[in-house]
Length: 201
Image (cartoon, helix red, strand yellow):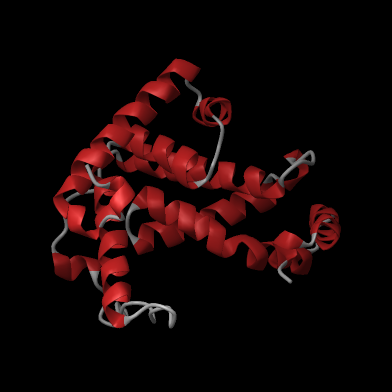
């Protein structure tokens, strides 16, 4: 069972980590690193920036551990992840255009993940295409819309939590989310054949 599902162990690790126990904090990192990377990847849109943001998230979390006052540790951590991505995006404002060779390290293995054995090869290929198409459409959103969409529709934050995290009014969150969803729907019409029936227009 992962620690994320074992609250007693999680609370013990948090308490120990607050007292400076690095091993205890590393247990928390192991329990949440995949979830944090998923969020940073959805927002940043590419693996290296996402990995940097995830690493920065855990460094910040360790430094600010005394500010954690209980409640969902996952939500507290993912809020830091989201804000970290936001800070990076604001700092770079827009990533400069890079050539393909600049993006790929010669040692980087960009092979697709091993398909789920319950899917046929055709279904696995189609699912991979759909995931890529969705990520491309998310990447095409402006920073504010992308962060709002990821927090709401992928991470399940409430409108109020999003407003508090990014420091805007509730109405701004709703407006950004509405525009982001409309843009995403429009973008995904180009790959309608990959969408489940209920999502096709």
